Length: 240
Length: 137
View (cartoon, rainbow over the protein chains, first blue to last red):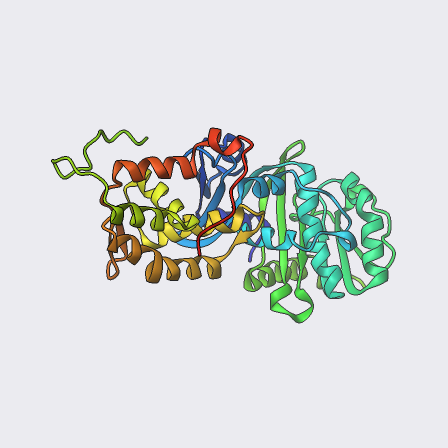
């Protein structure tokens, strides 16, 4: 992986189809998911299926199905700290991994970041890399990351732009960078603590205020590539 | 949706025999078969996997769950081995188990009406009425 921007491009090339089976269309899903790599299609059902459900396919292969209400919940998620989450949410995020989202808001971004942090928290070991795009975002999350560092054996690294004059994060390593992609993306990467089933990553770019463009993934090879890129570019060679 | 005129499609008047009534009610006595027929009534034809995608989506998500590949494949197996051959035996659909393609032949108007009542008629559903004790086996 040569850059986070390359990672975004890679995901943009993977096309998903979200077929909405419902009595009437759901335009809110079109707005949220119709991006370069997801097409939203409406297939009417007879009266009595106003709520409806979606079937997600990728290159003709079946991925999964959830109710429109459930999918809406992903787009208006509850926010809870990593140690206090509904474990059922993980399966929903799993079905929509490797799908580009064009316009997540801050709340949806935070909920997705929590999904990654929750996995790291529950595993309790391994490496967690988090990079912020705004100093205020980092400031808000310091208590979460301090608790992750204190209550687990996670090796927590936080990446920020040097211009922010970043505060310390107890128990974590803060990397202040002035070049490269740090400060241009919000990313959360977790190596699974040695377990491929637990790797996960979120990469997003705030393209206009409060509007994020990005993806999350559970694919071990892809997550490993992302971790290696950040480690080789921004960690290796740093003074301890 | 169910305007097919009075003629069941064979070009001459037919009336419902007891056998046909029994067959119609037996076919419609299962929620999955009703859903399949309602879907095919609108879409006319489908591949096995298209149908399984929709049926498993409906069955698993209506109670707030999700369907994954495992559920979809199980649904496909049941459609392939049980539901579609049964509908085909009654002449309502044509199902080719080799190409895995199913096509609606026709729904006789009385059956079409029953299906509409069973699946879509919210007026009947919404009203408060009691159901007498079940006398079927």
